Length: 305
Image (cartoon, rainbow, N blue to C red; front, top):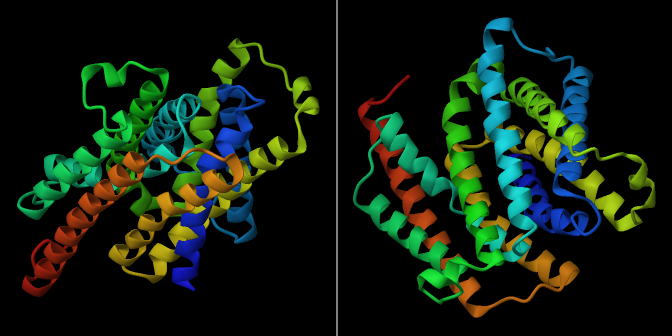
C-alpha cells in the first residue's frame, strides 16, 4: 500500500508540469496559481474533516505555518509557473530532480549533517547535468540569454527554494502532523496570492470561455497535484522508510518526459536527456551517501533524537 501511494504521488507530480503548460495556454500564471491552491487547500481541509483530524493550528504555530506558506506556495509557485511559461515541461521535470541535492547541502550547512566524499561527487554531477539541460550543450554565457534559458533558471531557483521549505518546515510538520501543517500552510500561501490576483484585475468571468481540456488541467492540478498527491506522499512516509519513498522521485522526470512528448508533442533533445540522466546520477550518489550514514548512526546509536 505504501509503495502504491508513493507511486501515485510521483505520477501526479510528474504530470503536473504538463497540466500546467496546458493551462497556461489560456490562463495567466496568477490566475492558475490562485485557482489551483484554492482547490488544493479546500481538498486538504475537507480530507482532514472527513478523517476527523484537527483542522487549523494553535496560535503559537501560525508564524511558522505562514512562513511555510510564503516559501512553499507563494514563492515556489511564482518561480515554477512563470518558469514553465518560458520553458518546456521536459526540462522542468529533469531540473526538479535536483531537489535532494540542495536538501543535502542545506542539511550540512544548517543541521550539521555530513557532506563529503560521495556527496561532493553527486553535487558536481548534479550541477553539470543542470548546466547541460539549461544550455543544451552550448556552454557559454550567451546560452543563458534566451527566454527559454531564463525559464530554466527560474525552475532551478524553485528547486532550491523547495529544499529551503523542506528544511524550514521540518519541525513544524513533526509537531502538527503532515496533513494538518500542509493544509494550513497552503491556505496561508493562497491568501498571500489573493492581493496580487486582485491587483491584476483579473475576473473569473473569462473562465467560462476556457476550453474543456484547460478546465480539466486546472482541476487536476488543484484536486490531484495540490491535494491528493500530498496525501499519498505522506501516507507512504508513514508506512515506508524515507529512503525507499525518496527513491520513487527518480521516476518523476520520466513521467514528465513521456507525458510531455505524448500530450504536448514537445521536442526532446539528446542533450536534455543526457543532462537529466547526469543530474539523476548525482542525486543517486547523494542519497546513497545519506542512506549509508543513517545505517552507521543506527548501528552506533549516534544521531538519535
